[in-house]
Length: 458
View 1 (tube, helix red, strand yellow):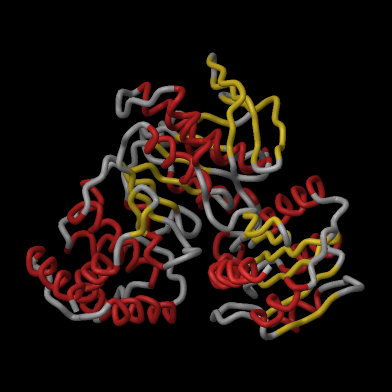
View 2 (cartoon, rainbow, N blue to C red):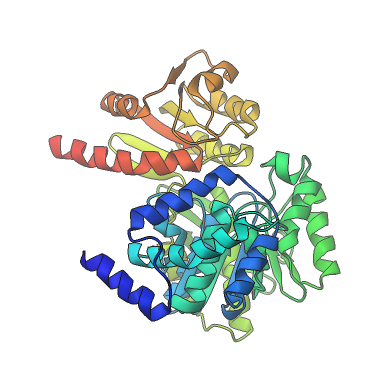
């Protein structure tokens, strides 16, 4: 009761009329908008922002796009800036542990009262917009609008790092005028919306490049990089590229992270350490360092080399090759497209080649499932496909039919199955849960609780 009363006082102060009185009501309304699907375009966002007094123009932001690695890159940069003493807002998707984390400050999700306030700000606009020819905003557009209002009017921060939701050119975050732009990489994902070639997808991703604003990229495919280079030239954006303006060397994998050296133009940083696992994470960390140094050079922020090192080492992003338990060995990873699967199986093969790998996999039906499952088949000694509750989720039996593995299973009740299988893991085996980030968001809290209870009985 006190929490509701405190929120009502906050709403009164902000001049917001109360439509929802509980966090649960607000969250159900937001999630109900999933029925509208994905509707690329900026007109609905521009309409809402205009009604709100254009809050997106009142924040200092870094914009992060790409196929994979957006969340990790964002986290590395956030951690570096935090180490420098700054207050950093972030906007990410999807969530892993709780919905509120999509809008966070210094890694801490907004509280329930704040989300309730934001839902009550945006709901009247959504209802009004629904009556126009533009039609109602999607779930992602609603959340994006909430984040702009929050960082402009509720919680002032030094900088906000925005992660693109889908593509770039028509993504709802692309009404930003950022201080720096990052494009992590290009992969063949969401091809039904973004295009079927690296060039087509790169063009959509390059849509976040802004006139006169520098762009930093780890894109490697020549045909995709050419698109990024052309768009940067057209828009007058300085472009820093991996293996050209900056490069990685002396990479070594360790049990709980990576060590590497970095050269940025004429400067070198040796023996940088990160605790996120995977060679691909060195590229994400490098992008964050390049942007941090640019912000330092421009006098926008004051960041020392030691703060960069400290920030990299402390950075943590859930659901990315995350070891939930060492004994028994249980790992989760949100490898949700072909490029993500490639990076994931590379790490499994290089780190655990002598382990019996029991893999559990769930995915959305609109992914390139044949290519993804083929890679998993070659890596897993045993593979189990599971269903989970999400509108676009593939059924376990559908995934089973695609697999060519000689040791494969399909399971509907993944909770009971995982609980039973964890009991059977021996010292030469490991349980690996991977696939859709929406699935990982369901699995992680369940497994953390189960493993915690299990440890008490051992």
